[in-house]
Image (cartoon, rainbow, N blue to C red; front, side, top):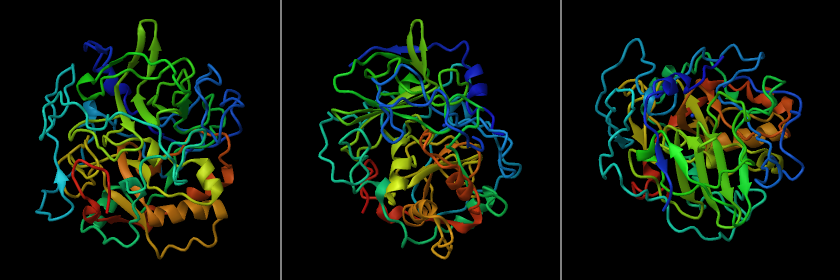
Length: 436
């Protein structure tokens, strides 16, 4: 069973001042349809913010009674307070490494009012580069979010990069060993919850209607949060549901302007909205966050493009990488990741942003058509290490449509069938997610 990724970290913050912004981060997940799942206006598991005041989501920090025996008993939190939360028994010295290019984020000073890692290339209060003026996107038909005309980042974005022919990373064997690949299997961190919580497991997406009201949010990590108003409301779906004590991610996409807003530890309080941190992207832009900045994910990346969605699986084509987690990571990150939350400095541990590919030799023909769709995506686009958590847990949307048979089949894939990939050749600019 996976522990709450941030519960211990948040306890440290009970006396920390929260900065108000006013302007200008897992278990065996299956079950029957939840009684409080998304309403009829829901489009392929993506509810409209205006469709119901009910909160709907899943908990990536909660395990059902049917949890796999390969599940790690604990998982480190996924944001700045947790950078030394879990340390390996033995730490190998970092040998020289030519590729991929690694950016190391200095560890923050430990104190109750947690500080963030320093940005090695720009001031701590730098304006995020990922907040250009958003405008409607003319969708090309590739990875368009249901209920919108919004393509989920440009076709040339790293999330859509084909890595099938890229070389194996020289650290592959070490990273796989650190993640226990020889004895573990993949674990889909989404699907029916079997009554363990009121909503399906997974991370929900709220499509915000045109001209919806935006509100200020008070962030625990204000120095690395985007300082603007967020389209949060009583209709916003929260991961795990309204009473969740898990990561409480909220992902919002504005239907008119195709902007992406993401928060974690999201709460609607009597004095207004609060969250651990907040991040914003224009879905028609390849711009990355300032180097060293977190997001609603420990890697400083957006969550949305790495979520597996049932609508795309049902269509027979997934054209992007899938986000996943592990419990021990290096205190470094590689492009396009912008942030790290590692437990130790060691090249034997995978850094945030590391990309893994299902080997081409892995036979998928005996799996169902939908399972093959997912496995082909893993062979073509791979998995992106984006958060600290249980090893080999990969994420999808909270959707009552996920078939139990598909979830069960995906749990049989051995982690040993993966290999780390050197993606350094894809990078065009360190501050852009555009890939060659």
